Length: 305
Image (cartoon, rainbow, N blue to C red):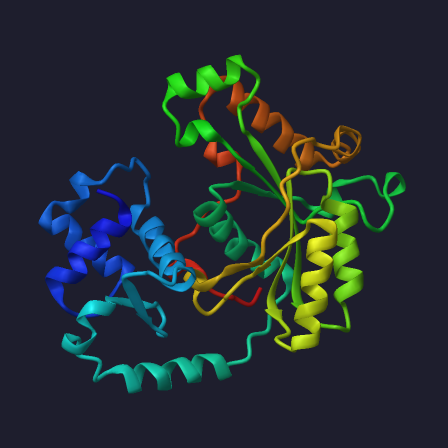
C-alpha cells in the first residue's frame, strides 16, 4: 500500500474531511500502517506532503482540500456526502491568519526550508553561517544560505546502491539554497544573481522566499530568469508548511563545480557539511544530528528572538 492508497482508504471509510495527522492516526487504529511500504520515522508528515502535492498538481487526483490550517483533505467522489458546514468558519479563520502580519527575518525561515527540503526533495540540509568564513577571503556574494544532500541509500535497497556505486552512479545529489524574506521587482535581479553566484556549484540551485509577488509581469520575468540560468524557485508558506511549493523547478547539473566547492570549504560550516556527506556515503548511514533539525508542521512557527 502506498501513502496515497492509505489516505484514499481512510477517507473512503470515514466519509469526512480530515487532516494528514488525523488520517494517519485512523490508519494506525485500522492497521493500514502495517501495509505501508515505508520505514520513515515521521510517516504522517510524508503522508501530508504527498496528499498536498497530488491534490494540487495532478488534474486526475482523487483528493480535494479545504484551505484550513492545517489543511483538511477529502475524496472528490464523496463531496456530496461530506459535511462541509464548517467551511465558512474555516475560511474566516484562514482569512484572519492571512491578515496577521508576521515580523521575521530570513533566519526565521530556515526551519521551514529544512522541512520542505526533506519532505519534497528528500534532502538533509545544513545552515551555513556567514560569520564562520574569513572575510578577507570572500567577496559579497559567495556563501549559500543553506546546503543539502540527497542520499539514495536512504530509500534504496543496499544491493541496488552497491551496484550503482560499482558502476560509478550513486546519484548522490547536492543542493544549494539562497533564502530571501520576499521577492519583487525591487530586489529580483540582485537576489537572482546572488543565487547564481552563490549556488551554481551544486547539482540543483534554488532561490527561496516566503513572499513572492504575484504580479503577472514579475512572474514572467522570474520564469525567464529561472529558465535561462537553471535556478529553481521555491515559495515557503509560513502559515501552512504543507503548502510550500516549487514554483519553477531547477535544472539538474550533472557536473559539480569542484573549484567553487573547494573555495567554500574555507567556511567551517560548509567544511563540516562536506565531511559529513563523505562519511555518510562511505558508511551508508546518515548521521542526522549533523544536519539541521527537521521540525514537524505543528512546531513550525515564527517566534520573536
